Length: 316
Image (cartoon, rainbow, N blue to C red; front, side):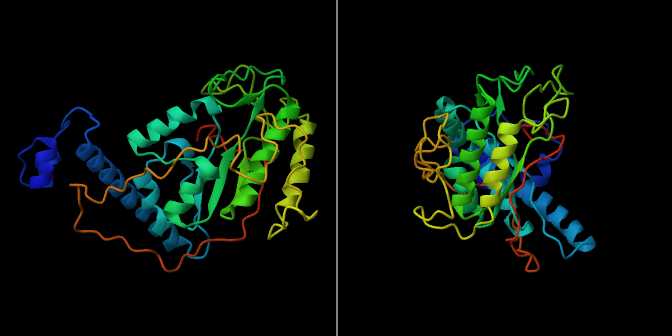
């Protein structure tokens, strides 16, 4: 309690005295307060994930639990760590912003304790040692006849044509194949969003088909070809024709080698090694030591897929 009182300028005798409080102090970026906030977020998340896990396992002990569908860019690191004992797969919605904003997103991640997303979600695997399932991704083009203005197309990665859209998909998909820890991906969505916008204003060309149910054939034909390669496992060497990682003649972002993340349109070669654990937080819970569920094991048979009809939209 002494450490907590010192950080938050309080004089309470127990954490029970926090219950009637509606505020403590203004949000600050003081290191000790950041550590406490992160630890509290992890504590709440652990209770949430454990409660859900136990309820699911009581009713269904035999099926995989596929996580919480984190939003890749804004997931707090402590929350991601908290899910580990209670899931078989870490699920992540992973959309791209334009590379010019990567530096800003890195700064926010460092400042707010969010996960870094470089190297196709490598940090999610490093933090959890669990398979990763991409539960939403997509790309839109401006030639589709729908506005595609929300999310903002100056920030949210957008291309000009359906051909570029197909190239983007192939680049993204083949990078997931190369990770060794991503076990599947779900495309958002089956149909384009309505031009007038759905309930939250989204009005984008995210579909496999347009609003009249006509396929975007450049995209769907490329998906058919690329998804078939997901089942070639383990991947052959680059000089083996059974694994063709350079099928795209035109990489819309200037990356001519989609078999490597090093030059990827999704990586700015940032240094992700500056993450700091919050083990010295003054927030501590001495009453609950979470334990892993020995009855659950990571799943390894999930296949790449496309056509996610989830109404959650592009941003989870």
